[in-house]
Length: 534
Image (cartoon, rainbow, N blue to C red; front, side, top):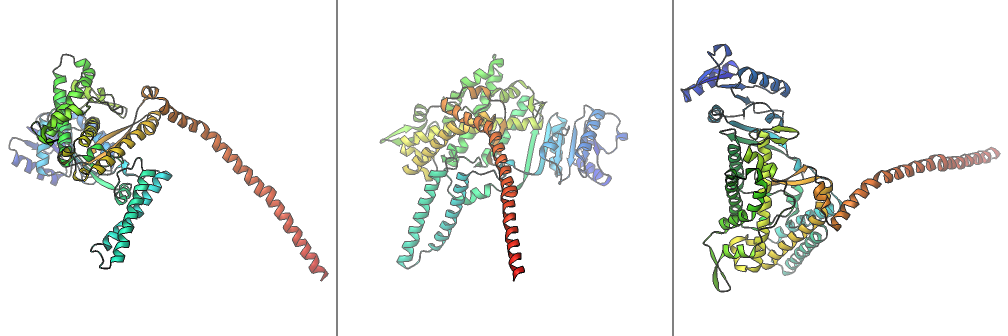
């Protein structure tokens, strides 16, 4: 197996010796004139990335010269380029700051016709940039921060409690007052931030910070099945390590026990894999979108069964009852999330190997940029489907108290806490349906949930949603009408304010200024005459 290695002399000789020692069947050559024929793989080690455009041109020249041999790029640790820019390079493999084992693995993957990407690029997440806050949100955040600080000080003074009875009584009363003030703030100003228990993490979440974003993609083949397996492995790893909520809104799955939440997400992934296999083997492949909709209720039922356990029984009214049987009987799993995008964009590349439209470019599904976009669509479906199921599970736990210890986290065992969470979720849902969703439809925005580095993060997608906008009810249409009215009146109001400002300038400078000047001149003349007479 002949491999052409383009690298500086010392580095090339060292890599060639290590690769041939670990793999005796490989013949690593350092110069093109040493090749007796065509290489099976071209490896180019880049010392420094000074111009990404020059590297792209050289990559294209290497691809044209050594076609069909795949190209593997070895990038330096510090690269002044974003992940999207590096993924746009026309190379089958991208490695950054790799060791010998990773290099060997990448060469094996590329020799079998796959792809291999390992990048560690420092980037700043756009979702963490400080947004423009309205008055209500500013009042909520500043108030929660001040209350949190005072509570931390008083709780530190109460640990241990003072021996005097009166100071301890005063501090405990102050703690109750601060907690009541926090609840009042959440009730008045926090429809979208309900459920925040501390203001300090909220303040930190709005600070932009640079992170080291790792991208690891391995494809053994370049087909739809290999692409789905890579996406499933990446999402499985994200779910296994545990997910934190960075969406800025309350999620129903946060109320589930961490083990149940992880089992639910993994079960949904398993059921999605089964559904895709079923659609691939179906004779009605062109109509997979209708079959997809028909299979959704059964998919959710199977996921609930796998999460709850087929043989788990819990006491209810003095009798042991099957958890799965009661949940499937009480829960309505046939609901629909109106914010889920058209499933064709996700299913067509994974089933029919169709190209993916990424920022105006049609890319094959095995392209890293297309794969990451498909992963975002799958993760959005995963989180939103889990949310539908989680809401029904919280409803069932309200009717079956013994079930809370098995399904919910410990803080929700109390009836008051569970009802508070359900009320907050209902308030958030109504606010979104009545206000936020019409605004998003009118602005052609869609919010997707993506899994990134152990976090559930929102991603704003711009796409035409006129058909959904025309289907809104009367109240939602009034919200969109208010936005249209504001857009229509804004230029006139701005022009009126500008003209009033110009008029004020004329009055102050030409009228009032001259009048003051005349008065001052008269005073000066009068004082001059008085001094002359004296």
